[in-house]
Length: 431
Image (cartoon, rainbow, N blue to C red):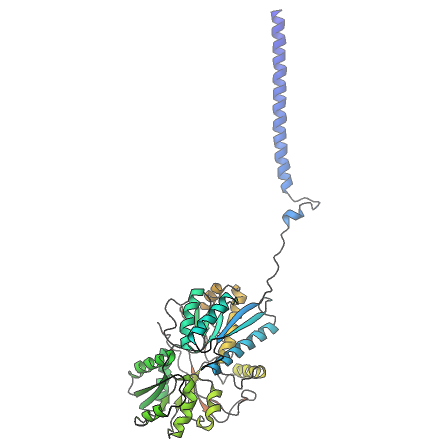
């Protein structure tokens, strides 16, 4: 009986073990099947059930306008410069938009008036950046405005383009968002003035400067540069608002200069030209990057053969003439000044930058520092040092002739600039 019970227990044990093994085998098979099912489910289904999980929705293209700020002088002492800049920038915006914009986005110009005033310029720049959302700002004329706005541009990290603000104090070695476009810094201007004086064979030069940032910068530059020559220099200082220069010219009479430099007094270039002629000064007048139409329109015959000036425009190139004809058809201005050439160029360069890197101001500034531009109507290639000074400026020096305007390039008369000299590329000033 004991043996039978043992066999029964043994058979029961074997049966139990078999059931356990079977159960274990079923569990292993189930895990493998689940694993295989999971792997299979990760593969794309033939019937398209997984379209929602494998298809991504494309972001809609950005069609919002690219806003560019114009901050320039539309009232105050520098209005004749400012209206040229504004119209040059607007012409470029219109032509780019007519061609389809930049990557399908239209450009929009947001215009602000700095009133030829430093504090108003700073306030206007803040509004353009913080309220209007511009990607860059161009058009600064006054050195006093430039001094205030350049500091803010560096703080806001927004590209700022100077046109005629030439004080050497505007840029620092840390500047990365401020760019000169037409007028180099004052110390770079004195060299070409000396070259012109030497070409004229004069041994005495008189100068009248304005008592503000640009004028004082030119004063220092002239003193330093002429000290290295045999030419004597006498400087008279007048208020920036002065229009009667008789007293200052009388002071120069005893000195008997062979050339009068008005480069340091932009608003006075025209009056100095006509009043010096009335006092019997039959000598050349070197201007201050002043709109030629403003001077010639105000002094008429006194400018012909006497008034000369520097500028960033090449009045003798085909692309200047083409741009001038389009500009005069668009603008109420009567002559394409180099301020308008610079304004057109600013928008052209920004459009290129936006097309390359988008509308981020920091990326735009970084991109521009690596570029050089042969712009329509320019006398030189535009590129910059790491701190925004013109790297290869060649301001063209021209006198004023009674005739010679190509057809369609001068609504103010037949007069036209006459070539005098183009200096070698100027050594960039280091602050």
